[in-house]
Image (cartoon, rainbow, N blue to C red; front, side, top):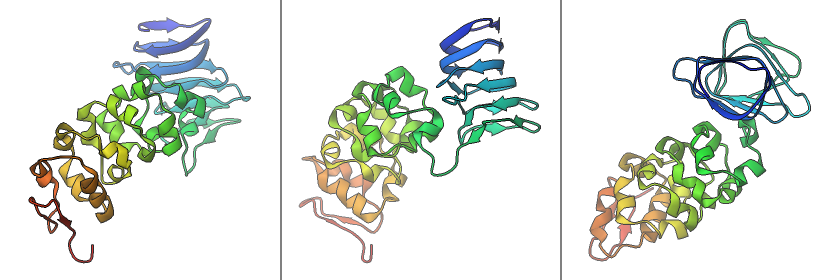
Length: 261
């Protein structure tokens, strides 16, 4: 949806790329992806609506029975908010009025703080997954990850991969859908969480794309876990990942951690 829109009805599940969307009711998943600093203003959000990204202004009112979630949004000066839930990625400008029923996410954050409930996660599509904020994926646990439809992972980005948690729940079917380039996003914080059955599915292309400094920064037990479970006949494929002070016998495949690690 583009242009300057004066809404007098209900707009549902739309990506807005225009200059201004004013008035009316919004429902479902509303994404402000405008590249011209487009603003959504003076709208009513029905129960369960998620308003993501971009800027909002004017009067934004939500249904108190199931507060809409505002996430990844910049709330412009002078905006008046009522009955909405603000995620951790919201930027609140000066002179914003937090009216009745406004709640702000507090740690520990959950997917619900970003507008994702268990049913949403279990019904994600690749298009929807691509729009999820990386910060939201950082709130996932293994049950969340395992419930994501495998095909949804086909759109995961490198940045999303760097933040996602709960990879203990990743299945071989989900792994097969992930673009190889996205594995470069794995970090020392989540790489070691991959289950053994997934590590055994790695190909030389997966190994080549891994971020070496992040690999080397992992805990010793995680490094050992990956090396032990990689299924390669040619040990030379992984020698470039051996951290400093570790020793790899390329003949036997024996890996020795530094003393005290």
